Image (tube, rainbow over the protein chains, first blue to last red):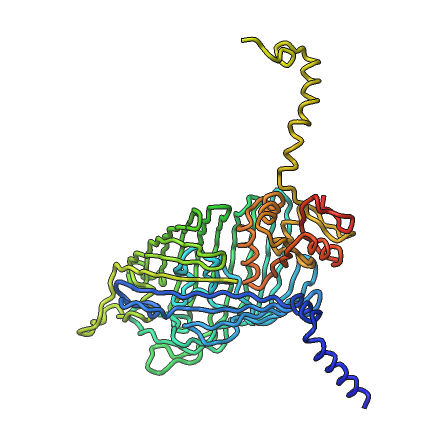
Length: 395
Length: 144
């Protein structure tokens, strides 16, 4: 059986070459490994948000390992494995890319959702200025998601030395939301409803989330200054709701997310600002929800220290923008300290007014308008603080 | 006080002699500075066409199809980033890390010394890297 002999010879050849320096060189040449992680301590003065309360805890951590394998001269396989306190162990993303031309690359698989400044590396705290994520990116606010499964195209266009360059990205597929071990989502897993009409429920099943979107990044000719515009439309098909709820008909609707971003990072200065608008028109008996959020944050590098300050605002339902169940404004101040080039310490204190995130994360009880608050039930604090410590690393 | 170098006093020079002294002295005065300054040049595999304006896009991971190398030396990294990219090495690392952790582009491969860089550039058809100008040989091509 000649083919078998040939296969055995090849196998022996591979086995013999594994221990050789040439094989090691080949491995180094074809594979790239990187990783990052963090461990937080967080505590609030009142209210409970994302499993953090006034007792404080070390329950927020993350470890991500990235592998890139060169498949051919024009194609690579990318994967990020993750283990964290909030999600099950698995692949955050896993996709293959193919270089169609010098400036155009195609992707297929589970791909990180290119949305705004932070979403693609949202878990890598080493690439972020502050400890707390901007509220628009919070899982509880549910304005964005981790990744999509489908296809994408990136096009880099040089506009010339006076105009800078553009990165234009387009994608289509289905949204991917990893299994949660503890966090719950507010909507669209929850039907968006007017206060007082229907009590929100958790984890309303959705059958599909078809997605179409894009992002344009303009790297200006001024070093370190860039602007981004991101947008996506997601079609949702709700399963029929439980009979106890007011609305019982299946719903197909589309949610829209847009975010415009600006970043300046050059030498000692780092500034970021974003405005995010999330629209859920509703329909078939559902009232729509518009949510928005913006933040400004800046830092200044002084030796190993990088102190920062942030202001942000979140409204999870613009129909009730003056109701503290649905708004939250926050001042944050803190500092980074670079222990080494790979390890960073962080300290942050936030002052909050309103409790939209505690409500959205179901850390605090929700009382529909007009409903009597049960005796002995905790009432969320309007003004509250959060304190956090972090060590993060990347390699 | 008596002028000890009366022949160099500008007030005593007419226009022609002043220009003559300047032409003689200027190269002598400025000669040491290029030797003191960090002089880095971008090099590619011979025959590879890369313009100076493309260098920034290649190192930011925006142009694919190149094998990109960096010297594992903070001094030369800073010199390269300053002279060719108008940024600090920290700024460049931030951009490269964003591309890596988003799964868009691989970071440049780091080489420990100049000889490794010369070998890598001369032996890899689509290679680009940088070197101290004094180390350039015929085996590589300098990006103008």
